Image (cartoon, rainbow, N blue to C red; front, side, top):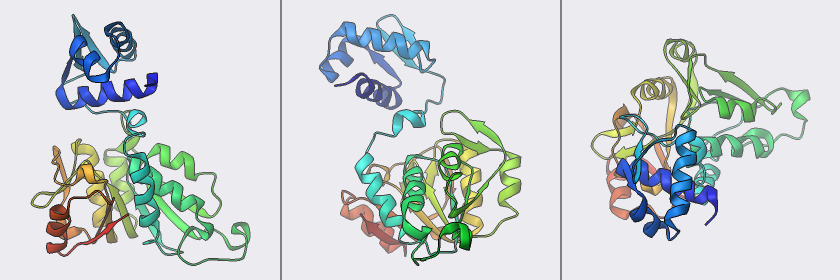
Length: 268
């Protein structure tokens, strides 16, 4: 296990449990106690956790794993989900993307696909202009798409959240209230058949809700670990969702409940 893999595992355990004990964690990860102590010390120096005697505590009351450490979780599933999701986007459409690891993969897939949409074009992007418009509140997505001439990029204003790189607040909301989207592709932390689409932070939920409200179609991209999971802040109910794109590991009962709610489910 590499150092990065250990850190990912440590932070995932901390996100789930809220605290770690050195000896138990060393046994779980099959490494030495000395290695775990060094890892916890280094993560504490980065303010990723609070070091305690014999272990560590989550940093703050509401702990959230930063995006840069979440990127390796279910990576292949997210790439397959992204490939399926971009097939739902037509050339010339206006696409809204909130922040998250799966929507980041969607942005990459949109950028790499020839022509930027379903319909191909033989003319160079410089001659024809952008063939796709992307509206996002995620700084990392904006950074990847800014150099793509075939994509017109619109970035909301707002206050940046360092955990997820998302822009939130009145400035972000103000921009979204002035645009109209063909499709919103939303990442989420939870997808419950009764409560709907959820995320951990209420300010991010409010911006994602605006994406959904401004879109003609709403596509939720979520790997199977998110199905049936709940999170603190509600984005929208299932009645607002047209399509859920997930992976092949999605439980059949969870898929059936979404389909019963009138949602198209695509398992990539």
